[in-house]
Amino acid sequence: MPSPFPGMDPYLEGYIWPDVHQWLAAVICELLGPQISPAYVARMNHYTVNDTAPEEDVGIMYPDVDVLRKKVEEPAEEYAAGVPPMTPATISIPAIRNVEVRIPVVEIRDRKKNQLITAIEILSPVNKRRPGLQPYIEKRERLHASGVHLLEIDLIRRGQRPFTHPYLPGSHYLITLIRAGSGTTDAWAFNVQDTLPIVPVPLKAPDEDAVLDLGRALALIYSRGLYHLSIDYREDPPPPAFGEGDRSWMKKLLEMPEQK
Image 1 (cartoon, rainbow, N blue to C red):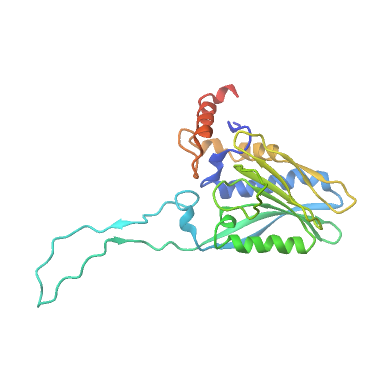
Image 2: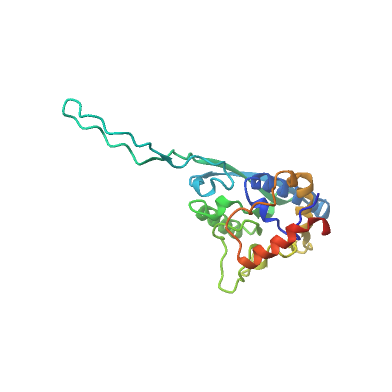
C-alpha cells in the first residue's frame, strides 16, 4: 500500500524515523549502485552520536516517560520530639538517560583506491539540535575541506538546519548539494504538498553525475517497511504543527486515499 502523500509523508518523522532512516540509506545505495559501477561503489556506513538532550524527542521519536510525578499531599504529622516533618517535594522528575544514536550515511567511493568521493547525509533530529548540531556542522566543514562532495537530505521538519541563508525560501523540507571545490550550494526546497525532487549525485571529474530519484526511494521504503501498518492517519502528524492551510490540505487528502 503506497503512502497517501505525493512526496514526503510527515507521519514518517515520528517514532519510526530511525527505521525509515536505515531503509532510506540502504535503498539509495541500491538505486545508485548500478549507475556508478564499475568505477565506483555505494556503501552504507554508520557513525554514532551520543544524544545528551533526548528529552526534546521524548514522545516523538523516543518512548514516553513519566516526566512529572506529582506528590500526593499527606496530612501533616505531629511534631516528633520537637522536630517538624520534612516538606514533601512538589514533583519528582525522573532522570532521562543519554541515548546512543547510530546514524547511517551513504558513501560513494572510488573502487580502486577506496577514496571517499561523495557523502550523502540524511539528517537525524540529533543533527539538528544542540549539542549535536555543532559537531555535525564541523563534520560538514571537514568533508568540504577534504574535497568531498556533500549531498544533504533533510526530511525532518523539527530542529535547526545546519545550512541557513537569507535567500533560502522557507519550506518544510530541504536538500542541499555542496560540490567539492565549489563556493556555492545548490538547494531544493519543497513542501508536504510537493513531489520529491530528482537530484544529481556528483562523482569525480570528468565523470557525469549519477541521478537520485528520491521519490522512488521513498515509495520503495514505504512499501517494504509496511509503514501503513504503523501509522494512524486519523491522528495528527508528529510536531511541529502544520499551519492552517497545510492542515486543511492534509485533511482533504486523507479523507480520500482510495482515489489517489
